[in-house]
Image (cartoon, rainbow over all chains, first blue to last red; front, side):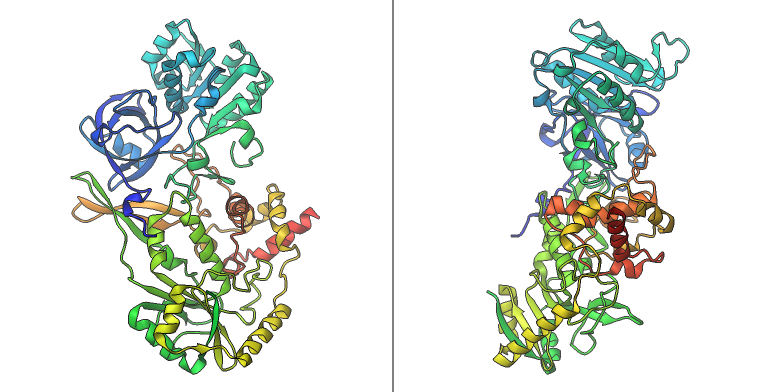
Length: 277
Length: 346
């Protein structure tokens, strides 16, 4: 049974950068088009492997909703060699794309439920894909609460959209920064400080949390205090995917391959997993 | 398919020569004190019929330490998947039953969707000729408890050494073609069949469960040992060199690297063996390391042999070959680890 090389999961497509925008000192936005404007056909919460020939490959969450057609968006934090090189690129440049990979957010399961989104730092990037998907399909979901946090006012992401969301009467939005800066008029404090201020009916609420590893422990404790069931707490875990297809081993969390079985998990799936949180 | 034939020992040299006329043939070769390696042979004179597990297992032919999977051109923005042409046809002669089990495991992992095309392309070109261990190689082996001291598939031909001949099991059409093509085999007679049965009966007495727990209890022992103090002990002893995973017949973790040609335009993406024992292995760009401690990384290695694969692949991935213990500079011993874990739970 000879397999064609084109069946290889390592086949890279040329993604053309349509435009870019500096979002913060560390994060840059990229809109990318696949050859023939092929649809990426991702689920919110999935990731792609971005290739820079000669530099390497890095896993990056898709930040746009699948409802957006013709191109997709990435917001990339400059953290390593690939993302560093990517930050030097602009409109008209090309990057390699593999994917989408992984299990995204369970959008079907969320339908009909009230939603509580909790995002911290660059966790707001994959969460942005889900939030915009939900807002594009607003009637399929119940009440929407969005809590966002980040380190400082300068590191806030998607600020323009956040301002628009705040003006909508059909969603509740609250945000905070860990440390205030000059001229900051918003809230100061950890993301957990926003949770008591949200009105939820725990039985009909799904909480979706994406943030740095340290955030999960504390946020989940708060949500359990509010009596949201384990199976209705959804997280997305960060690991270093290298192959994206459940082979190379780098992203493994005990028995799970984060790139295939995740990155999205419900809390009841990982509650007893000694390597997850 | 399965049928038994005989090759006279005096014909082994002719047999290897005949194989080498139409394929590359590799077999275990002595490499100094207690060291053997699979290397190319042209005849049967240099190979070792009695050998302890080779330094590297035969996985190096299925999944080389470095393998080009792609070529790219950064000016044309083109990535072209490639298969390396290491060999057209390869015969691996003299594979012990532990290593047959290792090959079977890798075939299963790489054949699972999404299939690893590069691995499968090599697999198709390889013919495997097994060789029975009539006795233990050394005290590091734990093949009896892993149930790999007897063959259970994974070969085209399987050789068992008798007094004057090899008793050969023909398992596949590929194996059948070799038997017919070389013309050196004859059907097994009653004498050889009896000799073979006696040998297997003798093995029953020699090969005894090498650790205290029985095979079917190993999964449970590891599943209940996440927080064992044994991992703290290994944390203090392990030097994180990664030898144990490199020599393991079922470790397949890898890194993917880009390397530029000197023209700085074209280059290749290669797959390189990696080790979960390396400190960087589970580290993310932000600096967080999800298995920062050596003990956690050793635990991960063991869990990947005795716990996780049982759920995922319905089998253990330890073959009992003993290579990890044999090679460990810190004398971390698999049999000891199993017994200590079992004892702590009892």
